[in-house]
Length: 74
Image (cartoon, rainbow, N blue to C red; front, side, top):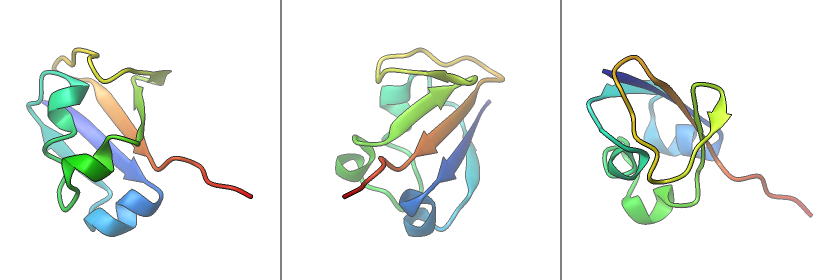
């Protein structure tokens, strides 16, 4: 089981702060975020076990994924 934590605007939009999944990759995980469509999830910053991760990063049992809304500024 992979534990996923959500922060930022996506946390507010999804209505959950964390969830667990059996996804085998980040690409797969982006399809199963509660309340978030894949189109919206593609811009999230992804951290796996305290390291930045790409969309094709493989996940294994016990991994912790953090999803962050991209920073905005101006």
